[in-house]
Amino acid sequence: MLNKLNEFLATMFIPDSVGTRPENTLQVAIAVLLIEVMQSDAECAFEEQAAILNILKDRFHLSDEEVVQLTERAQQASREANDFHQFTTLINHELALPEKIQIVEYLWQVVYADGKVSAHENHIMRKLVDLLHISLGDNVAAKERARSAALK
Image 1: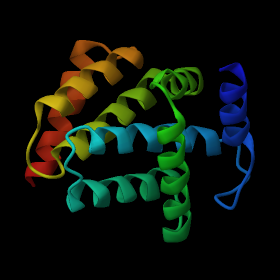
Image 2: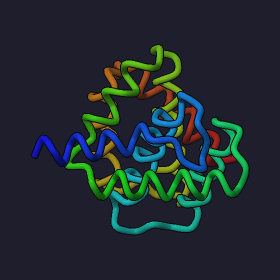
Image 3: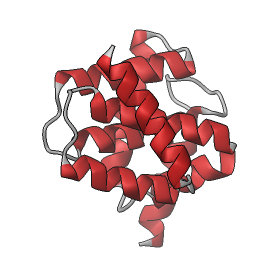
């Protein structure tokens, strides 16, 4: 089991064509959470996929090709992971509270992208908000900002 974890962590830190920037692993962690939220309701709507691509492109200033490569790495990392802890731990270590609140808002943007919020999406969001150590008030505010933006 430790060997599998070491192999996974090694792949997280090996530079690839997405770039050799140090934030690369943080990019993967954020992308994994976005993808997990999208897949949580077993209905991956086009709007949710587009929201993820736009969020990653804008947040990290990536080209279309780099976004595709990042999402492919994130999907692989998601398939190989047993839980969210490795990703949320990295985010908690690397980002300050306002940045983590922004990540939660991105997650809510994915939830609201298809115009409906499922019980599964609510469940995963509660779990991720807890793992990211975000207060109820900050979560509600981020959720409301994402909902308001989706209604425009």
